[in-house]
Image (cartoon, rainbow over all chains, first blue to last red; front, top):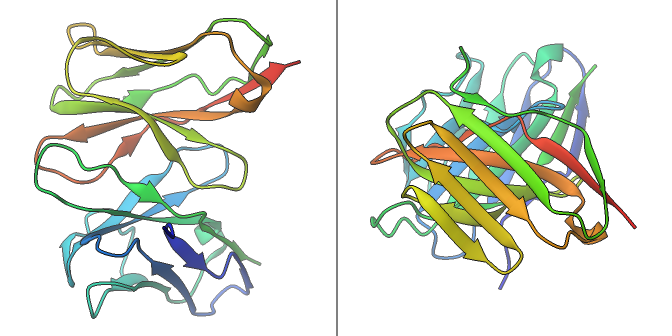
Length: 116
Length: 111
């Protein structure tokens, strides 16, 4: 079956602009995660959705970052007033969230954001 | 002190060698221990997952966890050029859903 997909694969924007990054999780997965990976670093957690609600947004760096998942499937990560330091690969993952132990998180290929 | 320490490498070995990758961690609440593999310009994919001290084997891969020393390892036997990738250790706290990753070790297997 299809994996996690993310669009666009690459996004170049200018400092101060607004961007939206989209994630389509694996069908049937109720949990969805956003991570950010800077060059040469491991992914860092941003936010976790269970269904439509954000269950944990403790990783969002500031109020310029916001994410939604209005129908419990597709999610959009929104970044306002982008800064050069926001340049990174934004990864989305989804899991079944069976409630038993640690669910496997399946990652998409990421969106590479470059802020000029 | 970082929660997770992982040598970023790069690590380069000849084909067929045994590879050892390691991470140390400081958070005693970590209860699930994982290794992810990430190819260039791809998302991470889960290789191994364990929740107890000891060894877990899957084909050419062995994951080892020592909770008393807060140290985990991944061993790759009979390494292949297709194993060339970045290997990320990852940790999870019981009841939480956010993975905490190491920096990743970039591995190259030379034919």
